[in-house]
Image 1 (tube, rainbow, N blue to C red):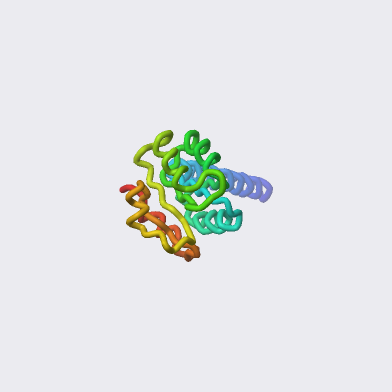
Image 2 (image 1 turned 90 degrees about the vertical axis):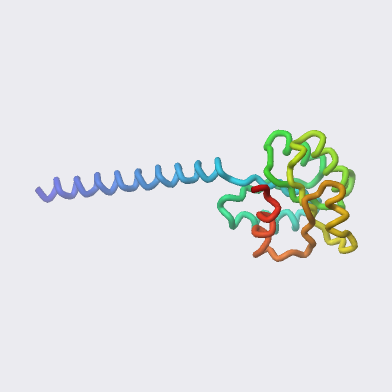
Amino acid sequence: MLTELLNAMMLAELFYDKTVTSMKQLSRKENQKAAIRILHVDDEPDSREVVELSLGLEPDLLTRSCGSGTEALAIAADWKPDLVLLDLLMPQMGGMTTLSKLRRHANASLPIVFMTAFRKVEEFDLQLVGAAGVIFKPFDPMTLAGTVRNYLPN
């Protein structure tokens, strides 16, 4: 009788473990479906890492990073981001050119937010060329997700 009781307890524990695992996997899949896709474009690896870590703290923000405008165009065409964080000053293809090409080849209403340490740029000037706004570097990694959310469409 004791053996039967122990077997029943082991089966119950195994069933519980499998149920919890299945629920966690389902929850992860639902989060990925509802995730907000953020494409971060910056030629500085350190900046990409900080942004990825900062936005990675939010379970509904899915971030992909790349180091050039050319890469951004390829990723945006395939991955369909909900928002782009775009470095203004990059070699080869700068932020302004990348923005223009993203507008032509990706979603024309895609919110694109410039990130720059270049303080002489006015947010108003960047909005005239089609940017949703600007985040100045250095930024606070703890508030970046909230700032990014402010630029997302309803």
